[in-house]
Length: 84
Image 1 (cartoon, rainbow, N blue to C red):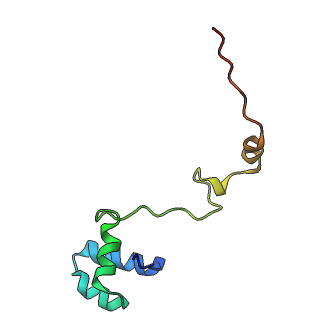
Image 2: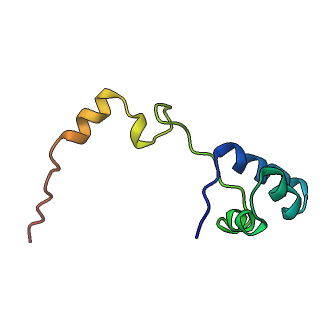
Image 3: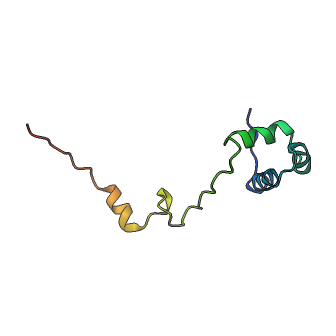
């Protein structure tokens, strides 16, 4: 079973992991089990995930489209007819 961590907890875990602290010490400091912290780190192979921009920021994400691009997405897709 996977334990949910808040964004602040995740940030603290990754900061301390990258600093070389033991998992047991920072697991105790945030009140989680060592296994839950280990699962969080191993979920990405020990590599800190890239933070995802919040909805509304323009980084090419779906929730951050302008009105002109949202109008384009509502248009019907064109069918490509290939003749032999």
